[in-house]
Length: 190
Image (cartoon, rainbow, N blue to C red):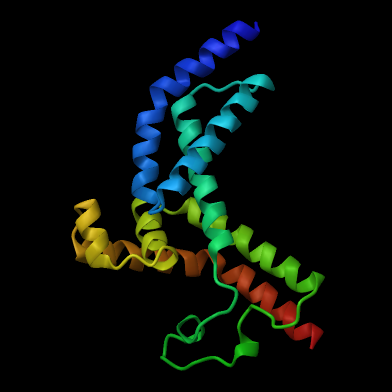
């Protein structure tokens, strides 16, 4: 049984490594991060086989695990403080820092809210069409200018702008309820 598992693992590694590495290189700028994520994904594959998880579509499963690792990596790289652009309303006004969701007061409640928001954001990002999610993450999280992104992907700047715009609209709608809930809870504790 163990020999069959080892053969299945090796076959999956040989078959999927080049595609997965190429995809990761398009998602991550840092070559070391590409190799780290690749190693993590294949470690998860070995664990899944060892635990007897049935994997019907190994390739799709590997890409899903890789996408989740990238999201985790981007969460960890998130800056600790919000800049003024993150606090702007649709009208261009800047919200006072206390009206943003991040609290200056550390503590369990703040940690919980930040964790809840991060989880909701990750789920909302997973629900986006891949093209919109990739455009949003590349521009907003990785800070890649649209011109550079267009050059790398071969997709026009206007198309990338449109994809990000639709991603923002969908994220706003998807996160509106959790925002209202957290804001109401925050107001109740003041």
